[in-house]
Every structure is written in structure tokens, then in C-alpha cells.
Length: 369
Image (cartoon, rainbow, N blue to C red; front, side, top):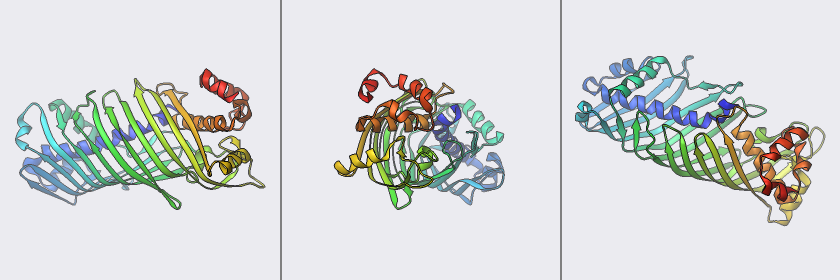
């Protein structure tokens, strides 16, 4: 569970690792900038179609990293580094911009919650450590354009879920390597295509890369809840969800590996099917109550939630906590008590519900009662 809770931070670290390694290799070996030389420096898992050197910039096309089976897991159509190469002889090296055009990354988590892809060989790790020992490297600006991510989760949901993120546009401010606790500003927007929907995602905030402390404000519109059904569906207890979307606003803060993230969600256009083999619950709450409420309220179901937890606690699971708090938020909106839904949420049972309820806070307890 601890591994699963930290997966988002690890993915962010992976992306930073790959592109910093590639950028450093391009710059450090610019005096002998030939394709074979850079590929040798990075190792057999990296390849480049071509590399062009101009004074003040290096551009590499079709940068590819393959896994041990030879499958491409990272691909960048064009990677451009702009810098004053004379700075290579100074104690601190400044890269004015790192631009990535159409980067793609495949991320996979196995059934034990371990990161299965991408995995970096020791040669790349040693190269990054070596560069860090030479002195600080400062990236004034990092720009990602038309990026894509495929994320295959084999652990958290009941069945594996492949989530695609497309049209990623991201800008990051000042980054220093080795990482420091100087705040790095970021802004990001993307789309999550699933079924007939194409949800939009926007997020901005700051992150301290050394400690992983972060503050962010995120907005999601039109997220297809059918695609993510394996995360909340309980076989034999849940209705069959045919259609539905979710809008969500979250303000998250992470300090010393502890998260506090209040948010607001709105479920829209829910269509369900009941019958043999299906239950009567939607996210642990009576589906008939949910549909009745939505019919009277413009086909919408709003709910408030607060996600809290300690990433260092092996019992804390971010996704499960998020889904549980959403369920309690829906129950509160419908005037249903925790006891009424506890036996049906993720099979928690009465004892599990009691423990979760203790952590919600007195205000929520009164509301649910």
C-alpha cells in the first residue's frame, strides 16, 4: 500500500530523471557531439535518430528509451537544450531552457504495487550521480508540449486499468540538480480520453523536489466514471454503471509526506442497470437514493470531501482513501449515515467502517447521523 500511495510522486521523479539525464548528456558531451558518442554515454537502452549542434543549443530527434525486453517505454520526438556552453567550465552550469516536443512515457505498476516500467539501469543512475558531483545544474525553464502518458495499474483496481493522458502541455520554472527545496512553480493542462468523453485537466502550483512538499490547485471536467469503475465497483454489490461523468476541484497540500486535500465533486448524467448478478449500490450508497436525488436536482449530485493521510504509514492508500471520502461525501449529501453504507463500501464491513469513521472528524460524524 505504501508503494501504491507514493506512485504519483515516483512517476514525477521518473520523468524528471529521464529528461535531466538526456539533457546533461547532450550538454556535457557537446564537444564531441556525435550520435554514437552520446548513446555510448547513456547506455544501450537509449537511442537517438539524429543530433544537431549549434552554438548555444543542442537538438536531438526521436530520443528513445527501451525496457529490458526491447519495448520503447519513453519516446521524445524532439528534445532541445539551450545553454551557454562556456558555462560548462563553471561551478554552476545554467541551462536556459529544456523543451520536449511530443514526449511519451509508458508507466506500469505490477500486481504487488511495484513500479514495473520504466526501470532505469545502473549506468544511467551512475551518470546522474556523477553529474551531480561535478556541481549544480540549473534549468531556468522546462517546457513539455503535446505530451502523452499511458498508465497501466495492475494493483489498485479489481481488474487492471489502462488510463491514457493526452495533449499534455506543461511549464516548469526554476529547477536545480541535485534537487533542492527551492519551490518550483508549474502549470499543466491535459485531456483524459475514455469512452465517448475527453475530460479536461488543469493544475498549477509549486513543488519542492528534494522534500516532495507541494501545493496545488487542480480542476477536472467531464471525467468518465465508467472507465474508472474498477476502482469503486464491488462485485455482487454494485449496480452496473452505463454512463456518467464527474467534475472535480481539489486543493492539495503535502508537507512532510502528509497530505491534506479538500475538494468538491459533482457527478452528472448517471445511468445504471440493475438485475441478476448486480447489486443495488453506487459507490456504497443506495443507487435508488442517488438517482432520486439527481432527478430532483438537475441530474447532478454534488459532494464535498477531504482526503488526509500520511504517505509514510504503510496502511495509507491514497486512491482507496479518495474513493471512500467521495462515498462519504455522497452519503452526507443524501442524509445517509455512515452505518447505513459501511457494510457496502469496498467490503469494509462494520468494524472497518467504524475505524474509518473515527478518522473523519466530529463534524462529519454529526452530519452523517
